[in-house]
Image (cartoon, rainbow, N blue to C red; front, side, top):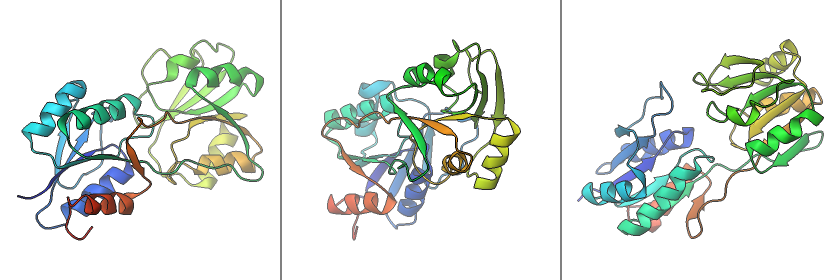
Length: 252
């Protein structure tokens, strides 16, 4: 029988992996999206949108659809999805791996402040600046709603959900972004501090370079840990190699 691989998607790497697998004769690949983005990009292979009903629902889906392996290529901050996937795969006896792009690393001239959470980022902001570029996604703005003396420029793919800080301007945009346009954005809005999650990757990294050029502090929210016992690979090639080692794919 053809191997069936489930990719938990929502990232560039997930789309690239689906395209790589779908191009292989005899391989069935299904990408699952949580449905939080209104207009997701095109995905090769089969596509399903929406939740599974927690870990138990996903375990049942894996059995029902005879899935041979799961690659969790969700966003590094999709903590609950990753936890449910790890539990479901263990319950269903399906091998799984987490595909996580490497996090960003600071360099000379960077003024980064690492924090463990959005709440901690909000606690730190009053001592760093009053005009903030906030790029932590549309679902976490409640942590900053108490900062009534701070002006926020919130950039996200889709409109953010309330509660939001009282002084907020929303910029809807999808990366990749270049350094010149990021510098222009910081200058236009007179930004004096940037807040971001450690998402990694190149699509949205230009804001970090722009902050360095302009000498601005950056508050970086650390990633949540991957569940204990779950393997991690850094890129699509490594995920394909993992599938090959597990005899899910012929020829790796």
